[in-house]
Image 1 (cartoon, one colour):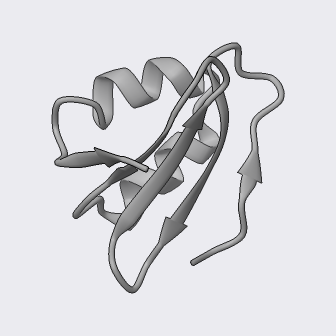
Image 2: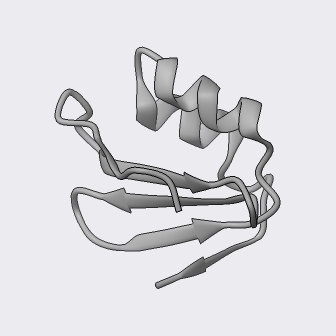
Length: 71
């Protein structure tokens, strides 16, 4: 798994990490829960890292588009 990336500027996302070998994006929310999103392409993770709003990017590009499980 790659390094955990903190997102203190986000009001919703506490941090995230991406495992390139399994294509799993892990996201921890500030108000509860850590989720694994499966089959996420690297460019989607890179887009999230560079997005001005992590929460907005997550909602438009990840949630409801990838299978997920709560940890």
